[in-house]
Length: 358
Image 1 (cartoon, helix red, strand yellow):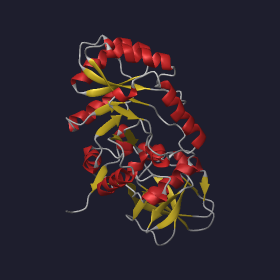
Image 2 (cartoon, rainbow, N blue to C red):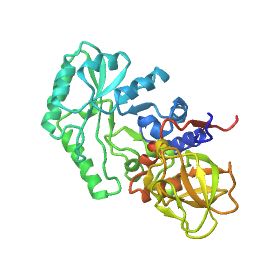
Image 3 (cartoon, rainbow, N blue to C red):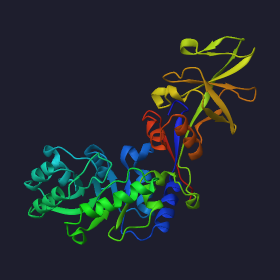
Image 4 (cartoon, one colour):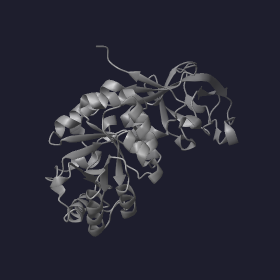
């Protein structure tokens, strides 16, 4: 690492967050750790190892590419692929013990003729209208097709809650799931999982459910202060140079920021939009010596500008992302969610894993 810009990933915090969640919601048999998008930008096998140590017994990823990458690191734990895959890739998936999601009659028919043994989960659309079966008749037809297969095991069935903060919508989804599966022998399906992070913490476990999915909560984000989850992710850089501007001098591309006073100090920081700090971050704060300072001017591909005072020196540490509270502030400013802030930090920013000494 030759550039002093990096992400710190706090492994013990991830482990403690998961342990807290399982202790708080102990009535499930299956705890899925959703590790898609490289563990929401945390990267590497070490965060996943901590999730497993803390009690997660199933992993979930987005694509087969992600599943294969995780399988190389973890040869035995079950892995669920949440997106449909191409028929031509079924052999690769099943030979590597990847569990597949079935979302349509066409997929079910194709996979039922597969000569390779494997497990599948059925996805039910209960209102998000992204993936899954919207008709209980189609769901029953798929169940019958796959039960006749000599190679396919229906291991699970699930849905996704799209607006957990809205009680009316969420309860409507719960009811829809019950109605959609009413023609199935649900008790014969080993794993039933309905809720992800927000819904798991906000609603009691449904009696017919035995699995839940942990996503953003593993990284400290919750709507409940009672859980006291910890920050797991910081982004740090350094001051490369300090420019002293005359009154009305400009900074950076297009000269959109103009010095408001004589002798204004501008720190140049070694991170930019190619690292995931997009130009829309202009105006929000970074932290130096624990104090907030505003980003000014257009953010460059590899650097950005911060208006500072005399206490800031070249090579000072800059917390570009300080903690989970800062991430929430950034997400609010960017009109997005913490998930996007985390996953936007690019692969070219090295991850440093922090773990307490035993």
